[in-house]
Length: 414
Image (cartoon, rainbow, N blue to C red):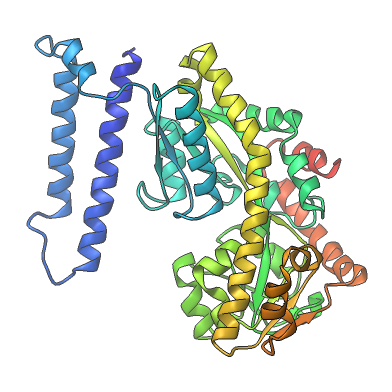
């Protein structure tokens, strides 16, 4: 078994190779008329050869241990996230970095890799398993391929309606410990589960009951549960890559999509849909995990540091996603007004309206002829969606792994 410094050295080398390859691929895509000097296979061969030479050098008798350790910064922790700069996950990772580096007085450096720098969400989970990165975000949509029980968070109407109660449930130490047992066989250590905000529909028409979904082409991720979830509402679930959703809405290839408010604003989906509907059916849940072997080799002080920082981040990230929802909703309303484009919002906006200053209230609501605040779904309307969604629970139990039934019971018990 190689030493931790050696494994860290190899992990950093592999991380650099992955990032370099993705950068070369992006440059090739951006400038297709300029042929690369070497074909990608040759480049990969050369990079792997370099990696092999570096590894060989690191264990060769002629390479001193001292020179090897001097060439790499000690205690560098890599943290990969599934979202871009400016997202909820990015705010989480930056705060984690700040607290870890402050409390170790710089002895530990945390390097954050936003989405795309190390590949897809699936790639990042695989790299976390191999120890190429020490920490990573892993949401149920991608993690369900490795830990099928995690798909419980894709079900509708299983989490509390109140956002604070949802976060209290997700941060319950007993629930985190239960899911950590599912992470362990995959070489992962679960640190936290948290919500990034309510899932919101952006639609080209009003939807208040399942009948309104008939014939609606609703964009979903490629997941059997999500396909079934909107299928039972009467919609036509339409898988589509995330990067194509804006154009899909613009060209009427799809009629609606679902995401948290911060993602809707960042991707400008509101520009091409007039309806913003808060149905209260689900939250966007993600998890923060570490490589299990890495976590086990940490000193007792460093393990305590990581767990205490993660615990502290539970309340911090709840406040962040709440603030993001308010700020991004203001931005959406301003954008639509600037475009002279009608926006209908259906949902419980009491907290949002209460957060506005008198000046903001006048600008965004009272004197805004392009904004229509429609009533939120009634209890009876939401109950129709709830009853329809219960069919999908049986599908989850069938495909959600050996402990799916127990997992669903634990979530519903709250």
